[in-house]
Image 1 (tube, helix red, strand yellow):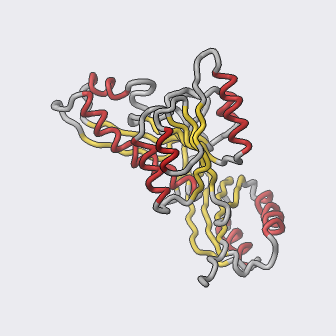
Image 2 (cartoon, rainbow, N blue to C red):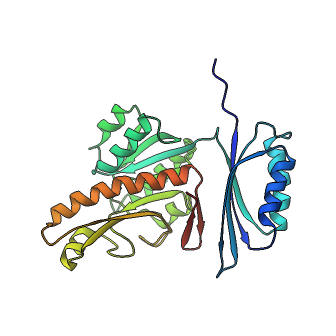
Image 3 (cartoon, rainbow, N blue to C red):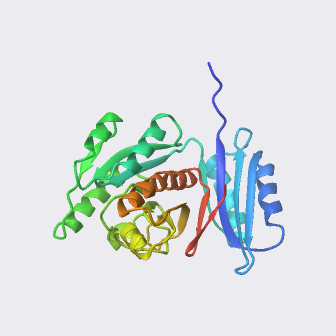
Length: 288
């Protein structure tokens, strides 16, 4: 029988910059028996803020997880830190929201099926039934919630109940063509990931490819970001671009853009579920 992989812990921490932070955090982990596997840190010099991501093996840690976190909280309080520790046996539980476009969800489900997403896709939610066949194909529960201006509050209430019952950690908007209400967004701060089909902050809102075509731009892009109460202005996780020319029609822009959307969204999801994203104000720190 194969040996069970040792439990790995990942810390994301931010605090005001001060001397000796890396040494204090590393020493704490060492004293508890942890073996550091990876450590990355960054200092925002203008704001005088410190950010770090640390991975370590828990195989020889001599105390329980609850005791470890209780003792670490004392150190965190002493340095005025905000922090979170996730563990390798606690996979992120995902819900995918989608409407009619299939290119993004196809990419996600394919990578999931071959084991390249370290997460659990627990359900798919849609306001249309066009892509229900994909849920059946990958054996993932599908839930239909048609949304109108009149029933939006009622439907979102049902969706939130379903998400809570399934203990969903993160929501992926894989070209979900509905604007979530502020009340909904507040329930999942920095846990709703969207893909926008432009290189934000350019061409916000609807039909960005038509806007790009009419402006005659030479580069189009895609942006994956956390959803906040302000449309298309949440902290950016990942972006990419591709060149276009005057020969490209609006249809060509859409085709080229969809290739970007798939790859950008998947990279953002991987950063998030592998605890490599640390939101800070309107920005994010990405530990690659």
